[in-house]
Length: 277
Image (cartoon, rainbow, N blue to C red):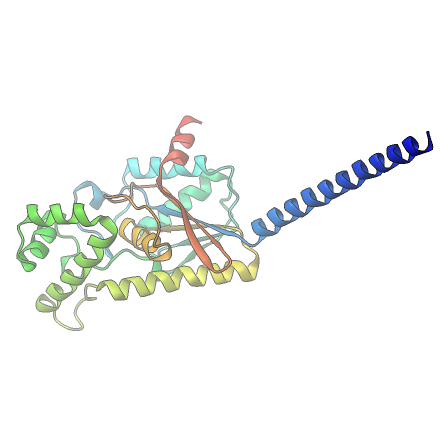
């Protein structure tokens, strides 16, 4: 009888100890998840809304144009769709179309009072003397420079993918522009090395500021080619679209323990959510 009582007591003790261990283990897992979340910064890269120059298919790098009515509408829908996301900080290219988009997003997600920090490093590629030219003409000039027909050049771009091909495009255009431009008259077309350096240092500085200030959710409004380049440079494993990014799309990147990870690309679900409201 005594032996049975001892066994029963030991079994109760074992259950209590196991329960405590599980509770402690659960607590540790929860604490780790909370700690990981605290150490993580989420960057929401938004492409600006459609502009007048987008509509007429003219090249638009450092030159600017206002959003079209449809461009305004899609930026407003994006803001509505992001109403559940509370941004700690907002950055924008200093181009008017990006600033206008950022303002519309904040006006519609309930954070109109949030200051927009403008950074020229977030600008689109600079096309030099080819700014404002019909995109078809600019591509034809680069194709000819590389001894290809426009059709052959387009096929190669599709094979290489947008991220790789636009960097090669920038290098060829930069060389072409040097042959055409007069020094000091215009800003020269940028080569890929120049573009990558300004974009990545800009994003690195945004993350450093976020870590210092404890900002966890950051909105960055930029441009199609620039955002694709940022994503490709930050995360070499990222699966990037063969074509460009849609206007007002969101591409999400997380930063944790010194590493960037692309979580989503060209996401229009926030716009769709905003349109449904």
